[in-house]
Length: 126
Image (cartoon, rainbow, N blue to C red; front, side):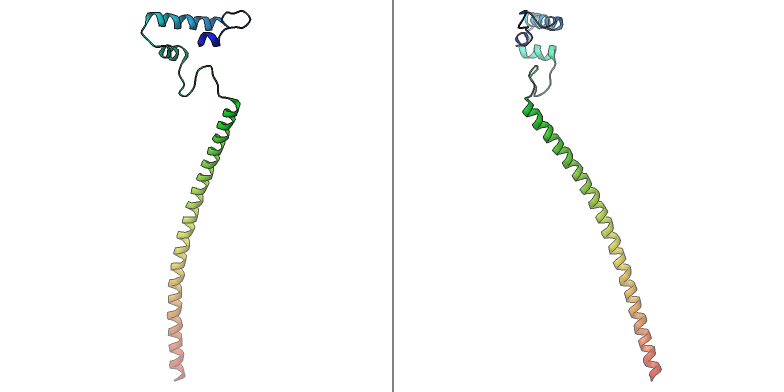
């Protein structure tokens, strides 16, 4: 497969010297070791999970991956913004609860003062 993908259509030989050296190393390893063809390819050409060396994704697949990547990135940004907003709303809610408690105490004090003044007025009228 390596040799087929690196052959020049014009000359019939390999496309460059590096390809020839790599092919020679691979043939030597195949002759001298008990490694499988796959292991030899991984050793000499490298290994990227999910990728077949020399075969790229189609333009349609690449565009789809890029679209999904952008969508995921946008979703993460929206999630971060939502978390920040939730924290702000929680803080505002807590502040409002404290304000309500303070206002209720003031209302109770005001009612007590009102009742006291009303009683004093009644006493003065008598």
